[in-house]
Image (spheres, helix red, strand yellow):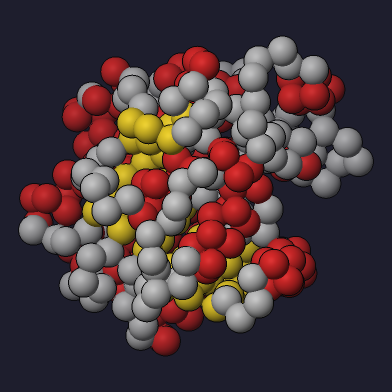
Length: 310
């Protein structure tokens, strides 16, 4: 298992920290000495997760705060709270996400749910927290993508799936490719501007979490049949969250990580195993698409780098 380096004195934010890879990431960061903000949509679930971690690691520093990445007003409120505290932020972990809801849903701002929650919300959060990140001596942003980014395509003519017949899997792939491109583009921007910010990306392989089951119900009693079949009877190898969180933990804490590094499981088909450098899909290497996507995200959020960084 990956041994998280000493994080004493570090201040970190982990989104989606009430379950799955987010909770495991928050737990191991806190156990390594970091002060961790567990950024969650449902505070009661966040507090329950915090209690579980404290039971296992008494005395660690954990705080629960509410954020709904599907609502840009909530993202702004969360970021404003941290900005008001004025504490430099050493690490932002963009982990939270939604996976393959069976029907198309819209966010509070009118975006397709997966694109809005998985990409637009984290983009807005990252830009809003840049002032605090740039106050830290060696800040990092680690963003969770997915292996299905390999099959993603950014369709600028219909980013929100309003014209085409909605495909849960293709919409998810697009959103996670967008995450991968965001992480890489942020690394380039940091280099161009001389920021000490390190941006990295990870994917969890085939990790068993409630993202594929509870996360896809959207309030329904049971997940969609396709999700139940895929994740309960799939013959492919899978792993638990302890191993599945490691690519994200490596991206967030490895002292040898390079800007734009992409981590994932190193075992069979890239689905399981110890974390290592993952192959970046060719689509994510397209600088023209990356620039256009970043510009579109600025348009959708009303945020831009010059204003935020200042």
